[in-house]
Amino acid sequence: MTSSSTNSRRTFAIISHPDAGKTTLTEKLLLQGGAIHLAGEVKARGQARRARSDWMKIEQQRGISVTSSVMTFEKAYDGETITFNLLDTPGHEDFSEDTYRTLTAVDSAIMVIDAAKGIEPQTRKLFEVCRLRSVPIITFVNKVDREGRPVFELLDEIADMLALDVSPQMYPVGMGGQFEGVLDYATGTVARPEGGSKEFLGKRDADPAMPEQFAEEAELARMGYPEFDLEAYRNGDLTPVYFGSALKNFGVEELIDAIARHAPPPRPQPAGEEQVSPTRDEVTGFIFKVQANMDPNHRDRIAFMRQVSGTFKRGMKLTPSGLGKPIAVHSPIMFFAQDREIADTAEPGDIIGIPNHGTLRVGDTLSEKNEVRFTGLPDFAPEILRRVQLVDPTKTKQLRKALDDLSEEGVIQVFYPEIGGQWIVGVVGQLQLEVLVSRLAAEYKVDAKLEPAPFATARWLSGPESALDDFERFNRANLAKDRDGNLVFMAKSPWDVNYAQEKNTELTFSATRER
Ligand code: GDP
Image (cartoon, rainbow, N blue to C red):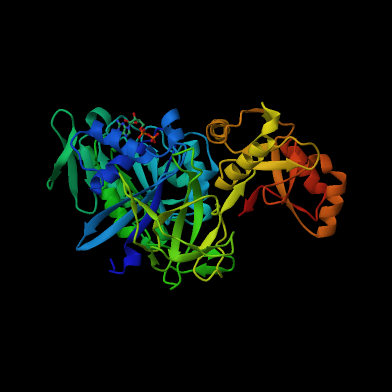
């Protein structure tokens, strides 16, 4: 490992299907990193949960994690301190845009798979997002302390379903009732459970004396799959596979060591044709998330910036692309597992929270010279559309303000139809609608109901001006503007989209829009 501070950052996320063990693994990673110091596991759980949701009122009320946040922890390796920035993605089943955007801010990911279930739908969706950006993946097959599927079957399923080379780094010695521990190929040692609880107490057995059947299988698995290849991993073509139990703390240390050793340090980020290198002198970064602060009476928000280049110093002036004039960043926040702290400096790969009153929007670039524009942060065509109906019609102004605010935060998308005054909101997952209604009431004192909209999906329109004008003239009833004034085709069905596209070959009907 090099000693440059840029190279000591590992900014990553965990992708998984609900219940695979992401929360449990997160807690164990934080414990490993020394970010949480305590005795009992139950307490650890409570504290970790609280740490993350303290300032998210809505999370507390609902008892679920609806927003991503950042957890930073450090671990020393051969005299060098590695800083891990773990970006949390919403644990709920609803597949939100937040998750996509968070994945644009990481350099690598851990894919957690339940040993009894293999690749599940959401694992796969999230994997595809990572693949789009060639985000390298380390796989953690979790819950090997329970009865799981045969190891070879799991490895083959990952390889086949994700079209990815797999390279096992460990081998579980039995699963479920026969679980004996986990063999680490690199050291040839087996981490064994001790005592009745089978809790791993740090005992590593140099002479594994494995049951013969497992020794043979382990060797077969090692021979039957490709060897680890750093370049193939970093290109997103190969995934090293670790086995373990987040619950019993098996394989977690090996996993974190793998991130330190193999996961890429901050990668260059796309800005149009250009790639902005972390070694660029100027401080640059982009906002991938905006979160309302815990106090609903103050419309304070925190914009999360992924730093791309330069050395940030507290008080520095940065220009947000959406504003055009510089702001001084006096109270940048860093997120340690249990605390938020004011950051004096930050490096590429770090995430800093910038408090603001709505000046910073998702997708904004921040930079010293105001020359770079980061690209690739997507909006997705909504899969659920609803009309917003005010209970008290005198609150129109407040509603408009709220919808604009919340769409800037990325909670919802808002569409203003060309005909008729009823605004339409669009989301990717049902949960976003519930968040919308409760936040309208709590933060904006607006009572609103959501009604079915006569549309099923939306597409952003682009093309030559004359073709757009023509299309607009004849399709006014199906057109709306988004919050930035972009023309959007509102379709009753996917079939309508295809039909309109076939009839208007000059136009592009896009299911995503880059901010
Ligand atoms: P998430 O939805 O992915 O965040 O999953 P959680 O971490 O909340 O875990 C879901 C359930 O699986 C919980 O009941 C955990 O206690 C359990 N679990 C997580 N990891 C393991 C493991 O390694 N072994 C076993 N047996 N159970 C686990």
